[in-house]
Amino acid sequence: MSARRWDAIVVGAGPAGSATALLVARAGARVLLLDRASFPRDKPCSEYLSPESTRVLERLGADVLATVAKASPARLTGMRVVAPSGADVVGRFTNFSFALPRTRFDTILRNAAGAAGVEVRERVKVEELVYDAGAVGGVTVRETCNGKRDTYRARVVVGADGLRSVVARRLGRVHATPPHRIAFTAHVRDVRDVTELGEMHVGRHGYVGFGPIGQGLTTVALVVPVAEARRGARFFQELDRFPRVAGRFEPRNLVRRVLATGPFARWSRRSVARGGGALLVGDAADFFDPFTGQGIYSALRGAELAAAAIIDLLATGASLDRYARARRREFMGKWMLERMIGIAVGWPALIERVVGCLTRRPELADLLVRATGNCVPARSVLTPGVLAGLVL
Ligand SMILES: Cc1cc2nc3c(=O)[nH]c(=O)nc-3n(C[C@H](O)[C@H](O)[C@H](O)COP(=O)(O)OP(=O)(O)OC[C@H]3O[C@@H](n4cnc5c(N)ncnc54)[C@H](O)[C@@H]3O)c2cc1C
Image (cartoon, rainbow, N blue to C red; front, top):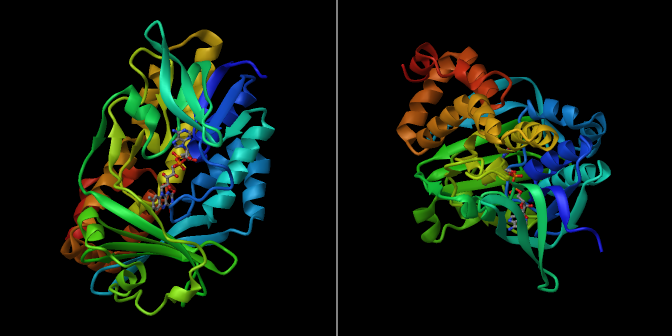
């Protein structure tokens, strides 16, 4: 039986958790990575890695990037945004982005963490936090295959357990804000007219995002207000309500069951536990809306910031609070842009206007797509001149 004490316990082996675990282990720490699922596992997602993610993957290790590049991903060169009327505009990245199934991508990262010396345990669900003298000092877990309960201790617990993070809920209030949307995602074969562009189609009752993920597959996400989903939205019928989507998907070409997730727009008041000993990263810390497709980048970049703070704490006893400050500095612009766009897509007339303006100003379309792809800082869009150009 292995010891029950580690330097760090990471809850969740998605991109945020695997990357954090890998980086902390590579600095010489003993790290335990827990996931309630068994890999490869699916994750409802549009499965596009924004272009800047490539750089983070490279920093995780040349072998990590090479394995992703070898896994037959599609390469996207930009985004097409289609307004409810069918009018569209294309923005191009400065380079390209990978897109591949999360079953493959997340397994590559989880394996890389294992290869870096992380002890990985699957089908282990974290249920509670354990406190030592006011600070988080471990977790209680249940093995999902046999119901066995146990307690594991560590100097730091990392909540990387996604949108419904149990660690975030145990640490304090998790805020939920409008718009309350829910998503349905699928993999479909032989979709008509798929190119090297991701496509975002805004409709009167939600939006659809899709793009190639390699090997003839297209990943498609239908995002609708919760109220719409309650009315019993039917996946393929809903897709046909979007003028430039209708007729491109054949229900018989569905190759994976439709996955549902949501509602989104949740964030934790604190990304670091008040008494110390724990922090949140990835969706566990915050997730607003999938329209901009920045979640995986934020998970990976957040992991770099979290790992730096944890390594410092383990070496010198420094407070984890520097992580909260680093997140604000790194993500403030992205948070604003993501929220702005997430709210705007709920206003079809506004999207119609923005698409019209961007058609006349292609350089602004490129800028917006590059900012959401993290190729340029989000703040480059958040200037009065650019914001005015989007609507006037
Ligand atoms: C419809 C939709 C489309 C999206 N499209 C894109 C896109 O194209 N590009 C992009 O970059 N982002 C996209 N995102 C966002 C992206 O999916 C997330 O931001 C990303 O997965 C966050 O990674 P994570 O590691 O924080 O969490 P996750 O990937 O959710 O991983 C969390 C892990 O924690 C585990 N876990 C949960 N609870 C427990 C527990 N109690 N104990 C142990 N383990 C636990 C889960 O099994 C899971 O493996 C999309 C999201 C949605 C909803």
